[in-house]
Length: 268
Ligand SMILES: NC(=O)c1ccc[n+]([C@@H]2O[C@H](COP(=O)([O-])OP(=O)(O)OC[C@H]3O[C@@H](n4cnc5c(N)ncnc54)[C@H](O)[C@@H]3O)[C@@H](O)[C@H]2O)c1
Image (cartoon, rainbow, N blue to C red; front, top):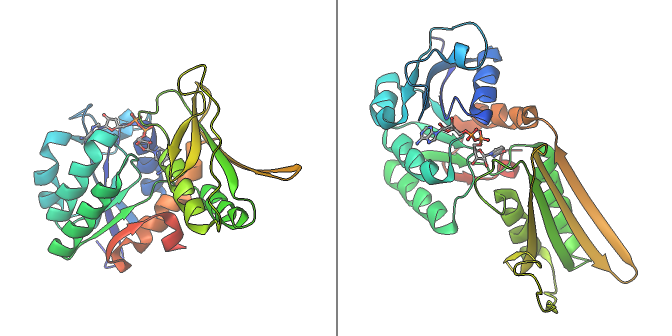
């Protein structure tokens, strides 16, 4: 084990994103796959789970996460699990002295506050990244810029039908950025809903519409309305590989960070 090697445990390793992360970690010359954790497939070889040759790394059951992290002492734990599990996984990693790099969505403001507090308490670091795709981060930046001139805006986010949370973490964050940057907050003239929820939900005073369909991966449109004009910004993740350069970047930078880092834009 060289000084610069980064030992990575993948939590949620058997899921759609986790499997992609496992393959990505194995392909990095300066990373080692120290272990894999999941709520299913315990005891299976992770190579076989991802449809490849066995690699001698077994899946450990999620209930043994704390002991596993203490025993393996990895530098980083990448987590792509479920909104219900992620918060407790982050705290478990921090308490074990491991940096969680989290792609799981569904963190609320008060969860982030708690992570910040535990980082201070443990002198630790946590990276929570609601969207690892660089294009999606750029979309948020461009949306914040456009909102300075075009304050009337709605967000449509579209995802595959297995996604557990709505709206997406990215949509919430986009709304937050827009709300911060627009000079004027237009009063929404809400029409009477003949069908409940048809005008979407609202975050930071901005309407968000969530579409869930098989075939989709992760997509977002931000529509700005002005006098006689509409500006549409759109990003499409058409493959889960779109998230991997961001994951690699975050794992590389994790040891240089301190406290809670929330969002890929803080690492660019
Ligand atoms: N940040 C990003 O860029 C990004 C991109 C895509 C998806 N996501 C998010 O990543 C998460 C995972 O998505 P997915 O499509 O891979 O889901 P998935 O359902 O395919 O995979 C989740 C995996 O986590 C496992 N799991 C459940 N509870 C666990 C626990 N307590 N500990 C360890 N493992 C546990 C499950 O068994 C499953 O294998 C979702 O929250 C999704 O919104 C984030």
